[in-house]
Length: 469
Image 1 (spheres, helix red, strand yellow):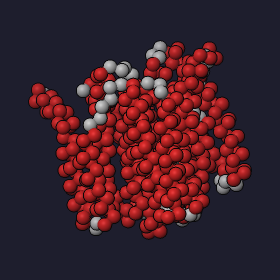
Image 2 (cartoon, one colour):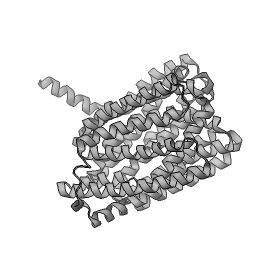
Image 3 (tube, one colour):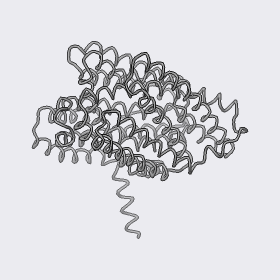
């Protein structure tokens, strides 16, 4: 119960600070779809996919290793060793990233290459500073800078697209400037540059970080083959317009990802602090996974009919083809969120050298199904392939965890989660406005019923505290 209270408290902090602000970016979707043609938005989406490929490979997810070892080393000097060895690795990675992006952009003739490269770099810089802020316990600072970053991003998008009439180049500039502002403020508070001392550079620490993070590099490549590869194939086999529709559908799938990201951040901190192999730890992880699965499905139940009702107001009529692609993409996103959740458990036990095997299996399943279906059913093949890939990986990751701890899931929960999922999908694809209004109310009731055994103890505890005054 103590861990659950901590998890709920930290999740709340990240929810109001991270999800609340990033949701503004989603609300800019009417702006993007009104001022950018589907082909333009599709080209932008493919370009950032390339940037994220090279950045994820080059930067090794080093911020994950930094946070992990900071939690394990509480002394200030040891933490400084971890931080600055990690920053050195990040700096070398940045040089490698710039060189690779320059070569790739020249060969493939990427439009707006500086903006594309900046997107990938600042994405990683935000991760570095964000993870460090959280590791130092600066959660409120992290939230505050996130709000400022989002405001800058949104304001610049409106200025450049609406007032100055830019094309999709505006999206690169707005994103990069917003992140730059956030990182400058974080640096002013964390003072990483001014605190640097050569004595903090430790060969053993650097080797430990590299040993932890290098497998994540391979995992990141496999992850790109699971997600980004689909966008490239859609653009190649169909066209950028189809990829524009797919990108918009993914934006809606991103709602679940945004809502879950606050929990994932809180969960990561808690998971990294619990690395025992006793039965209590096994029961904790088993219960947390079951609860997470139920919460994800309940979110899906409520969000889907809401999307049906909101779609005409959020997306320009020129992107109407994206609507039918949303449901399967949402299910794939749901499976992908569980994929990240399980990875954090595995990383706790420093099994990153085998994590990539599950991602590799998922990417192979994804690519195989994608190429089999893309010419038969079009861009929807990307959603089906992605869903299949995540399901394969989730199954493998559960098996990996079971080898480490006493990890037992109650599979009976799917006896009622899957049938109601079918009802929601039927309502979205075949139902009308009135049907989806009813489904919202029914989904809320069903979600309360599903989660009641988990939330009732918390309600009773709060009631008892209120009675005691």
